[in-house]
Every structure is written in C-alpha cells, then in structure tokens.
Image (tube, rainbow, N blue to C red; front, side, top):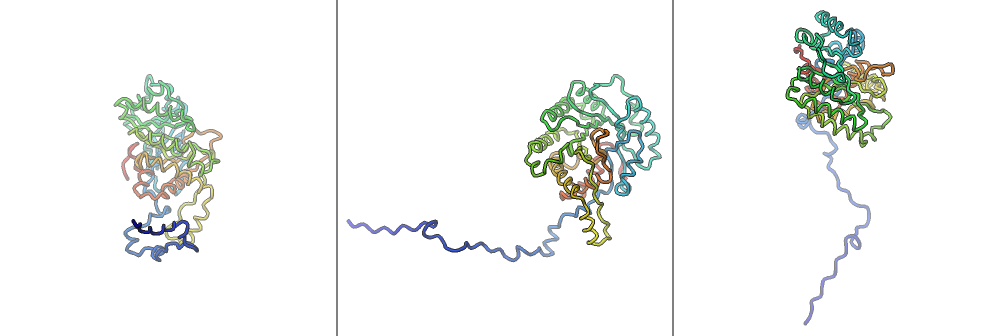
Length: 371
C-alpha cells in the first residue's frame, strides 16, 4: 500500500519565518492630533476654570473668637470673603465655664447691630463630664435668639462621654466635635466610632446633628512625600474609616485649616476678568511652591471624603480645629479660603457643589434664611 507524502512542517513564526528589520508600528490618522471642531467642543465643553469658579455666597462655619469680637477675623477675611459673607458660626473655644453665659448674652444682645450675621454660637461642652445635672439657661432659651450649639473636644470614648453625646442629640442640639484622638493609629478611629455608634443607638439621636472637625484634612506630616502617602497605610485607613463614618446619617464634616505643623501658605486671589491673559499667567506663577504642595495634599483627602459623604455634608470654616496654643501655627482666613476653594475647583466640580460646601450646607445645619 502506498502512503501519500506528508506536506512539509511549516516553519515557526518565531524561528524561521521571523521578519528581519525594524517592526512596523501602526500609523495613527492625522485627526488624532488635531483639536475637535466647533460642533464637538460644544457637545463636550471643557470644565470651568478654577479661577472662575467662585461661591456666590459664603457662610464661615467655624470662627474662633472667645470674646465674641469678630474684628480680627474681619481683618483676615478682607475683601476676599467680606463681600460675600452671609453668616458665621461663632466658636467660644477657650472661654472659662463661669464666663460662658455672660459672653453668650453679650453676643446675642449685639447680634442685631452686627454687620456680620451670627447663625450660631458654639459654647464649650465637656463630654467627659457626662450629662449635666442642670443644663445652663442659655440652652433653655436658645430658640428665642441665636442658635446655640455645643462644642467639645474628643480624645477617648468613655461611658460618660457616650451618655453626654446621646443626651445632647436627644435634646435636638448640634454638637461640634473636635477630634483629638490619635488618628495615626487604628485605636483612635476605633474609639471615635465606638462613641458615635453607642451615642446614636437611640432613635431620639436623630433629633440632633454631629459635626466633626480635624477630619478634613486630618493631622498629617508634611515631611511624608505625596508619592509615598498614596500607598501608605495611614492613607488607606483614612479612606476606609471615612466611608464608615459616612454611614451615620446625621453626621457632617468641617473643612478647616489642617494641623500640619505649619501656617496656611498664602495663595494669590484670582485676577479680575478684565485683566489680560498675560497678567493672569503672571499671578499664577507667583503662587508659591508650598501652596501647590498643600493643594495636592488637600485634594487627596477631599476625594475620599466627597466619595463617602457627597458635597452635601461638608462645611467650610476658616479657624483651625486644633485647640489654640502658643505653638499652634496661625492660619489666615483669607489665605485658607483661597486654598480651600481652589482645591475643590481643581477637582472639576460644578458650581452647585462649590455653593453647597461654602454656604448652603452650613445654612442647612445651623439655620438662616437665604439672602
């Protein structure tokens, strides 16, 4: 029987049939390197310029002035904030307990003649002291004048602190909590979550609101490069913990100057619209390298917070969260506003988001009619 001859085995492309010479790369059409035509650009408009995205009005949700005198804050705010300010939340942090009632009365009596509306007065309240045996008189008459809210510092959870916070929420009060627990360690986050979980267990807790400070941005070290921070365990923990905190429906976050061991760097205000492009570029070049570094770092923390809370639960404030001491770096209200506004604007957000963070959310939490 004859057997048909088998065809020769083809050569492997990787051996005998390998092309010699340089590999031919695919060629892209010229249209890939040309800008879209007018019709396309109208359908897909560019994001607004960060310099042009300004809040229509501003409510400063955290102004520390123990005596109730806003003159220092007004000098710092200047024209940058002054013309658009529609109210402030006045914090009496640092006032002695025996003097609180008198200061509250002085502020309330002068509120009608003040050029800056005071939406609320934040009075000191010690969580660790537990439920007050006899609430101060200004809490009982809060509805007849300026809104009274409680301001406290949190370091560790305790039965007394849990009971005090639960009591305040059940009274329908807003409690501003300056978080001073060690957020560089999981134990600090665990303690904060324990306080919030147990204090809000009762249905009555929904009557009040909680505003956290020193969370956005959290304490950080400027010596840690941003490249390393991206993959650092502290940043990963911040992302997860922020998401957990957002599950508390009556919880808001203050957006304040961070405790980074340095004062807020100055940021030039945006050039007026009538100025030339050359003058605008010159102003942009004057922005310090430090300010750009701060904005990059701030935006890293804004991202996870917005993803968790949305724009509707973030409140702008100009005074630092950390207790003022002789070693606490000063922060200028006008400089922080520009830095905060540009950080948000450079994320490509819309006008309604800017308006919410810088005014509308504070009005929702503390009250106050639209102008």
